[in-house]
Length: 340
Image: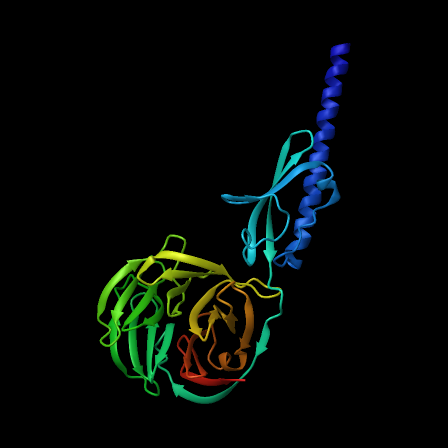
């Protein structure tokens, strides 16, 4: 009889403990879910439910190989955008429970709505599937995509006739490109490598693998020190220009209430990164120090004149002095716009 009573007591304690764990995890899950859309800002405290904190002797947050027991949004651990984390709760009885969560971190200040006026229009070859787009003086350097028709070319602004052109093998889908001194660097989409060309002749000089952290190649620009690349995620990578296989650092991009991913063609101008967002008629102005979106252009009125499907989208940013040149995949025009 005593054994049965003891066993019943053990079962009861176990049942109560399990229920308490479920209550704690349910409360934690509800809290995390409610905060996903609201988001945090750097410096914010993470105020967990009382049911969790009252029954915990220690709470830590892990990010892969990093971990902290400081319940605040510390930029040493968190990036802008979505952060996949695990909460580990050590209960007062010594037991440990854990739960995965997503913590969104947004920029503190709303992004400015940037405006423009069209000052000039130039012809653009509708066969060109624009992936990379730069201007140097009055010469356009363009990287065009699609398997079987990928190439790097250059032509005079106002003309559509190439001055020089170099094609890639049929298995290569060309992506972003940028000018670095007397060379042109160009990414590929899924071949995990980039090409280097002579700027004058567009003769192929060499190639390089990009770092493994980049799943794909999308956009590319240069800030005078590092190559800056996107891979279709929320991340932008700074690469060592003397060794593009080496990542120097990266940033994640977010505005005041939105995480931006599918970052595509890039341009660096006067201390800011400008980025197309794939299949959206917008261009973001990004602080390269922390990934904060400080401004946004809406090019819907221009884009709707050329976009009839999912491919012929806005994708091309260059600066001609203080004015911006914009175009898109298979568009018939390049627009020069003055930024207000």
